[in-house]
Amino acid sequence: MSSDQVVLGIDVGGTKVAVGAVVGAQVTHQEESPTPLSDTKALLDGIEATARRVIERVGAPAAIGVGVPSQIEHVTGLVESSVNIPLTGVPLRDELTRRFDVPVFVDNDANCAALAEAQLVDDAPASVLLMLTLGTGVGGGVIIGGEIFRGAHGLGAELGHFTLDPEGPPCPGNCPGRGCVEAYCSGQALERDATEFARDMADSGLADCLDEDGRVSGRAVVRIARDGDADALRVFERFARMLGVAIGGYVNVFEPEYVVIGGGLSRAADLYFERAVDEARSRALPALWRRVTVSLARGGAGAGVIGAGVLAAQGAARDTARLRAESIEGAE
Ligand SMILES: [Zn+2]
Image 1 (cartoon, rainbow, N blue to C red):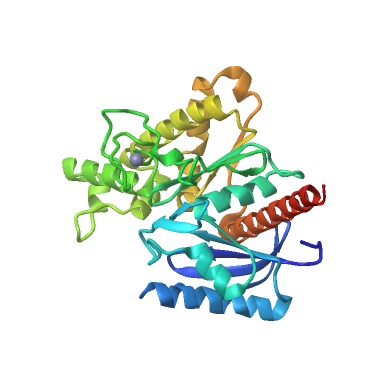
Image 2 (tube, rainbow, N blue to C red):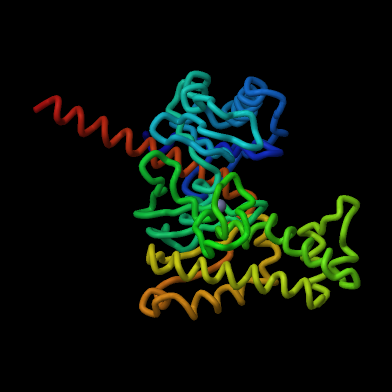
């Protein structure tokens, strides 16, 4: 790929499709549209139409990267499973390659977000970085050697499904485990703990937050914790402690330069981040801890497009290098 050709980054979320032209970690000409959820064809048509609006302005891209909230078999670009958008079983890479006639690279959105953060942490891209995406569930991304680590088939790096306590609560994700990181450090875990507490203690502030369905929302726990409600703060104390236990363990295993916390719940980091870092510090091997920086994500809502663009640029560069090596071999 020549340096004057752009790549496109496409971030497919549960509510919107965002597309931009990406150079390095910079996004230009971004376009957005609501995610069509009625069926697969409507979704693919919607992705194509949004991307074409960018292509009209920047010209044909050298490659396209796509991040989706789904499990992806990396080698084939096939969507293994997809809970919130209709893509399960869809050969997404082939479908989009056919529509755009340029190389397409597809990956999980958490992996793309981690790839974006690796570009944003410092002046130079990070080599080894872990990202935890704290939202309804807990997503994970692992960057090693500046690229996404995926495991054998692209399904690995599920940091949220690492077990912290074998006798812990059932994992709220699509997972048979108990006591996973996601069972403590997710929006679903927060709501579960707050709701249980509210039902046990009828005269508590959390009980006042019970909604019509008999549940306490994550938003309500955050609100009254910020107002200093002792019980809500106790819910966050467990959240923070378990997050710290997880981070300490990950640091020991990967020796990352950076651990980054992102996702919707990172907006409530004032309620758990410092406590989690203290817990991790007290548990990680000191020589490793001294060399790691733990921080909140920098990419924000734009990280998905940046990461998908970097995915495309790295993939196109690898293809170019491989073709060159093959042509040298062929000439010998
Ligand atoms: Zn799990």
